[in-house]
Image (cartoon, rainbow, N blue to C red; front, top):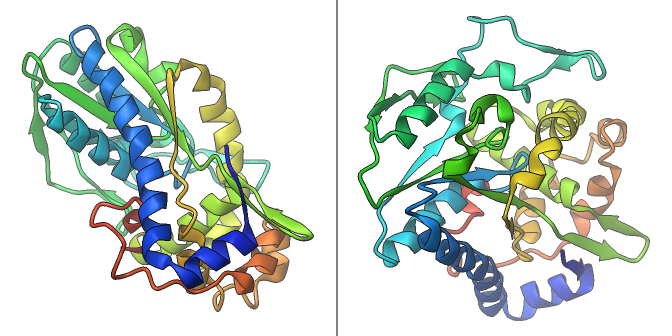
Length: 306
């Protein structure tokens, strides 16, 4: 875990954005390479890599970066997002979060658990599966499917917030390597700090507005339930991980706050209620950064800003 100082971030963003972005991305990719080396060495015994982490950790991009890294090592990799196994809204009884009086969208009961477990078992046996597709904007499963089977010498990376959950694995752990990904850094300034979970909130607020049809106020309302879900459904299984990745890019909050600062001006009370008051204080003080000429095509930040 790294603790970054706001003054240092702002200085780097203003004086040398190109190198600031390059160094940030290289630190993230170095972690990917170390994990890829380990996965390659264990591929014969463990052809499944489970990539788990809380909301807005960058799981989808990291799964793709692992795929690219392993391909450079001569190993073909397929990726599966557990998000595609969500059930269509309105076709099941959605679990309720009594603590926060909202629907519990973090619950594994929102997913097609029998189908997902069946697919994991078939992959381990080398059988073909038909992967569904979920449209988050429409909150429904689409008619599109993807056929997938693992050939000898291949590997599959499966990513999702429930990737380590024993309900889904059911004995398949012996075929899998666990990788835990999250934002594990914080930003500090005089009088306040942005902990890792609030940095992830900034990612999620921008992503949900851009890609999931949810305005910032909806993300704020749901945030306490998101955090509850992390405690209930992710933290108990974290010990399964043999590798960890910190996906935070020190320059990213300059980009995200530039998007959010205007949208948060009239939401101080809601942010305080959600335990996010520091975001409100911090939003105006991050330096704008000229990132577009320098951000890599496969940066994890694209998962949130597009």
